[in-house]
Image (tube, rainbow, N blue to C red; front, side, top):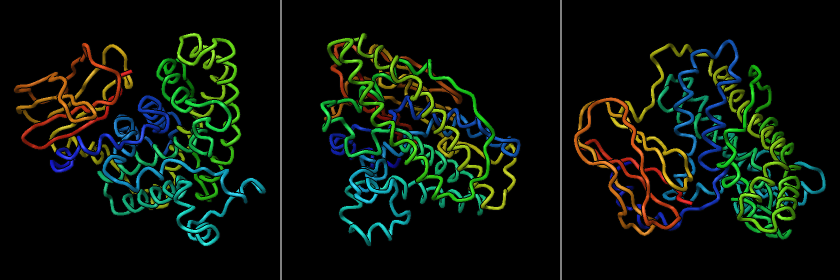
Length: 370
């Protein structure tokens, strides 16, 4: 991130959209486990595992600086009459705009077309051997694929507002997932070449849409058991009801990401990556601030960063109004990986911004304190 964007962050932070796919935790998990489905031709892509996970939420972070980003993360597909009648919509953006108009289409979200455009960009990067951009496009692809496997991102009833399930979006995708992420385990199956990529992307959206009702039923059950939506009993009941299909959605998302990466690579002629061709582009620039974990967090969170050379750094934390609330690190640090823990004291829950500053520039990550 350049200095100009960092200076602007106190203004844009307030406008950030809170609904963000599976949250940082879920997106990290899905992208990291795409490697479980790498086939025999994808051995070199193991080098991407940590990078895809670290950048899995980059697309969410762009919402604060790019007004066109938010519609790429959802599609209210049941606002299309043709979908309610046939279970499908036209696959090309031009055709659906011709039928419904540009304003309507973008108002409903453009998730499948953002996914396809990112896939095409990945193919182009592979074809020209631009590994640094390829890995970031693959990370964005993973984010959009994961959003397509989050049921509340593919319905007009995205927050349960039409069925008396208000607030279910974040309770399901973040609160529950953060509490039970360690129990979401699965194995992969070898990725296969996708013959028809648009049909594949729209296909998993159609397949995942019925889980909208499953999430709402899980919420109803959890409320009936606990009598509320904020207790540990509610979270446990929500997980007990939904863990089967939630794990299935995570597994399917990881597998789909692996298959789309493989297909993009084949489309580009299967270029040889080699053991030294892939590196995190932010590390190549000399610094990398990784996403804090866990995120969201309640009592403490781990902060990790990497330096190619010894340099002076500062790590500061700001609230959504641009007020600095903490300085976890300040001084000269040696080259290599560094880890520290931040335990907020007398700080209210909300959105915070973690900023690493060095003579080489600044990087920022969004944090959520529960």
